[in-house]
Length: 148
Image 1 (cartoon, rainbow, N blue to C red):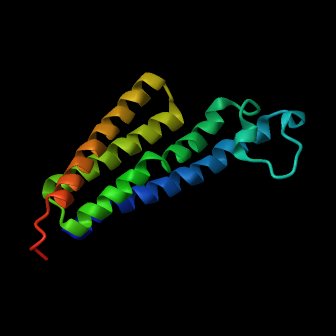
Image 2 (cartoon, rainbow, N blue to C red):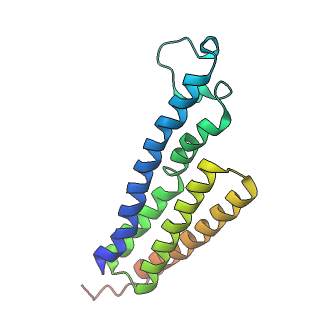
Image 3 (spheres, helix red, strand yellow):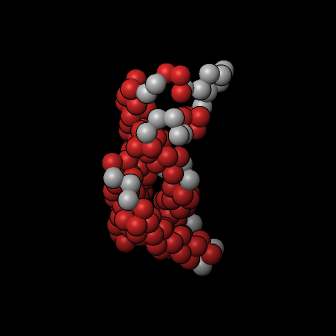
């Protein structure tokens, strides 16, 4: 069952890389269309320097990519903990639910980005992560020390 618990984490890593690649056409396409005199003229330009210069929609994939490096880091830790202690079928189901909701959240943020829907998706994924965390805490804190 360990591999089944790790699979959702692997898929979320792959999804994070897909979103990273999504940034390229979004930003470069917008940069190609913008008045070049509005682009930052400094060394070491960062993505955030494009805020307010290119259309907001072109920055949405970058914003989402950042989000995929925030709360999901807790998900990865919980997945590792549950993999070590031995996940239940419910843990695996919750992990897949988390990943599915995060992918829907990404697609919504990158394409539509209406905050009320995005917030509901974020809240749902957070509730799933809380459930996984409670499971990880109970599986470790209340583990029988005599069992190897």
